[in-house]
Amino acid sequence: MKMLAMPVLFVGLMAVARGRADQTLPTRQTPDQRLLGDWALVSFQRDGQELAPHGLVWSICEETITTRLQVSGGSSTKVAETPYRVIPNHRQSAIDLIPHYPPNQGKVVKGIYRLQGDTLTCCFEIIARNERPARFESAAGTNREVVELRRMP
Image 1 (cartoon, rainbow, N blue to C red):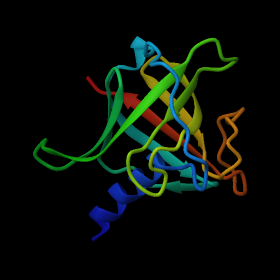
Image 2: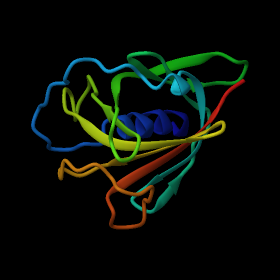
Image 3: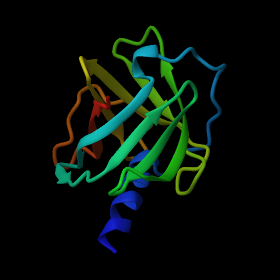
Image 4: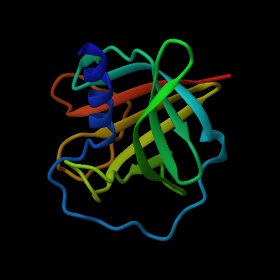
């Protein structure tokens, strides 16, 4: 039962924008090529609370982020596939997620990201303010999620 709770929690991460009006994406942007590949979840904070990231992987391709749960023996189970885009010429590196599943189906979830070596950090708003986070923080009451991932070999 605990094994199932974590994938559901991570799917919740991918669908963080609650109650926002449906929005459509502008023309597809070229992804940041440095993001492409497999990333293991190292830490996950939501509204100031640290949550356990056991075995979760983001596979970032040109148009989607696929979330998988790695299980013993090297096999994995696909949990969710989410279209995304990076926003060029933004004051920070900006990323938008567009989930195809409830509760945020078809809505744009705004975030920021930073890439330092083999570490990718993302921060997403989780309330309906439709604002992009300005900092990588998830203190209690901020209604943000911060995800840290490490590039897999």
